[in-house]
Image 1 (spheres, rainbow, N blue to C red):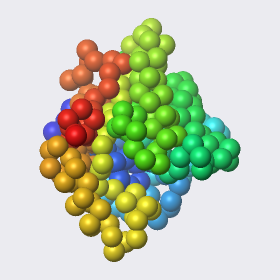
Image 2: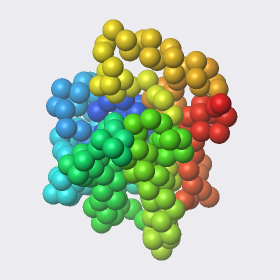
Image 3: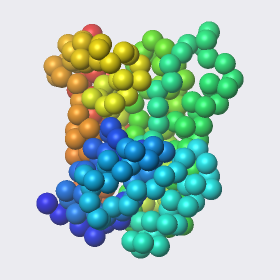
Image 4: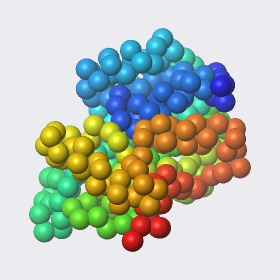
Length: 250
């Protein structure tokens, strides 16, 4: 498979979960480039799976100097960048009654501001005609309990796909957004005790119209499509990869 042969990509949050699934799919299609994360252990583990055509960069996407370094370093090693995947993010739980200013700022910095500046800082290092892939969430479409801010941030990310595409028409850089539903990632372990993880996954699968939760590879395959010439006539679009949860769940 070579739909991304000779394409240079940067995937934020590429060290685990959905981001690693995207990086693996890109590698399988011939891409090279960099993955970005803050956990050196998971970066090392990801690199063992991705091989020599990728580099791991330990960086904080909420730090603008770090973002500048990421794209400068990648372009110095591989050349100009063709694909940016702004995947890094996290679902911080709470309601309007419980989330204060510090948690608000942390949530928006990671899930919205960092997405904007990932693209902003990448643009000088990108080839014209490139592709930007943003990662949304079906929490932007369904008001899940305790995901008030996260859902709002992801709703704005979905809008960014439209606005970035409009902004970048002159450079023929396309921006699109993938909206996952519940996906089998290590994030489960951050919210529930380890011994309950399997039961929670089974519960979510029973709620999904398709009868299972998503896999990182489901998102990876969609990201390959949006990064490749197969989607050259698609821009400013949201693709729901959520097992029917947004529109079909009861």
